[in-house]
Length: 214
Image 1 (cartoon, rainbow, N blue to C red):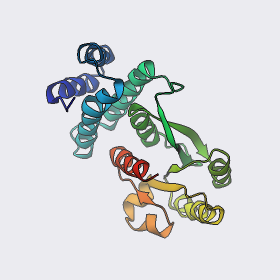
Image 2 (cartoon, helix red, strand yellow):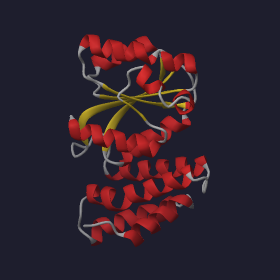
Image 3 (cartoon, rainbow, N blue to C red):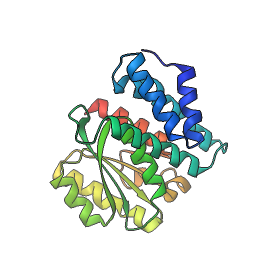
Image 4 (cartoon, rainbow, N blue to C red):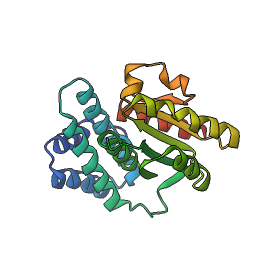
């Protein structure tokens, strides 16, 4: 099964109209008619649609709320077909996502939905402290960790996390994002992060690349 441009476009349009019923019907029809598994549909219909929506937001063609609802609806559809405890889900590598002691959750929620929509599992730690992040890295054996911050002072503390990772030799990959990293595109290197994601779609791409390395 290759990318079906028309079906991916129909799915995208349903998401932008916040029409979950139509979006779900498109997925279910493909599962029955094409007789492929959900991962084929994720690769060739869902992912292209979500990437297109992400680019439209980047270009200012749609509102952030539309991107959020599109990713949320898709996450719900995938979770109904492929529950989080389904053994078919790829649980390797172990992925974590958090914000540092603040409540700017929308960007994190979009990224979480995107990753869940691609069939991977991740743990959402909500908003926690640096010390708690260190504990989770060790206790949960996190291999890829997304950290988002709103304030510069919080962004700078991420270096404590990367130093901890180096000291403990956990080999955890840290992907950072948020306003401070957008204002200073070299900041992610200062805190020794693995990479910086400007958008949720970019974060997903980076995670997929890292997954291939682990």
